[in-house]
Amino acid sequence: TSALLVVLATDRLGLGPAGYGWLLAAIGIGAAAGPLLVLRRVKDPRRPLLVFGPFALRGGVDLTLAATTNPIVAGSALATYGVGTSTGAVTFTSLLQATAPETHRGRVLAAFDMLWQTGRLASLLVGGLLADTIGVHWVFLGGGILLLAAAALGSTTRIRPMTGAQDSQPDTTVH
Image 1 (cartoon, rainbow, N blue to C red):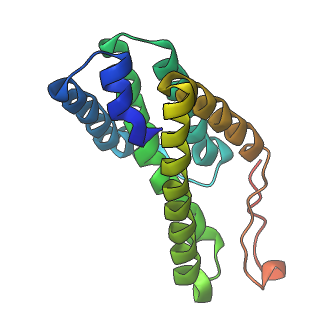
Image 2: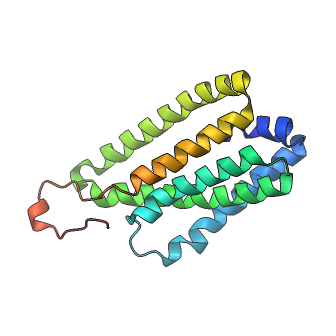
């Protein structure tokens, strides 16, 4: 849905280029504030709330954007989205670094980035086609629901180190 923000800004919120710029600024402010406010207090970024919470946060933002036509509400939601995006990126990277075997860490991070970017490209195509077919409102609504489902599914996941020597490792299962 993030690539459709410009469509949402013009078609649903009635904003021009300057208004769209303010929405992007709100994301940037939230993204800058996220690590400063949240991650400085976090000792273990592998907790499911911190790993999958950004999905739920983003789902709530998408649902808010689907429901509102008020630019102030949209901007506030997007600042929250910025917090979730920056903290989510840090916690996912920390999770991969903490759980991947040292000998495979670079390959794991590269594979994750490749899969993430491939998914983004596919979502641009699908999201654009859906926005043209059913409307941008429905794409944000569907995106919000899918993100909330991903957060719920992910929060039930047990996160463990992926080393070959697990017997000598302390149990780091996340509860």
